[in-house]
Amino acid sequence: MGTAARPGFDTDILRQGIEGHTPETLLSLYADDAEIRLVNRNATPSNPKVLHGRDEIGEMLTDVYSRDMTHKLEGCVVQGDRAAYSESCQYSDGMRVLSESMVTLRNGKISEQIIIEAWDE
Image (cartoon, rainbow, N blue to C red; front, top):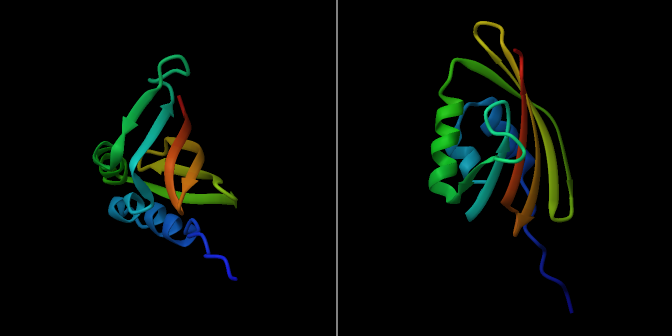
């Protein structure tokens, strides 16, 4: 008796979405009920920004990837139902942002994500 293959997380789609500035492509990687917790200079660990579901996540992705900046996937590791990746960004004025993400996967889709961002100040 064979076993059914579990869908995997598509790192090629992740790279295409990040580096191609296509929020719709990135949004396809999220489960309908996904949750993001974002920690950065404006949302501290004690009070992170929390996004619920694909609609809120899509709004955030559309905002971020419509800005005048470059995005690069620096690395991604997938192991079982977990993945981690690094993204570097640079605004046209030279300001840089580094983003680290830890994700939980369900059926090959992101169900939970913690994003930690550091900005040039």
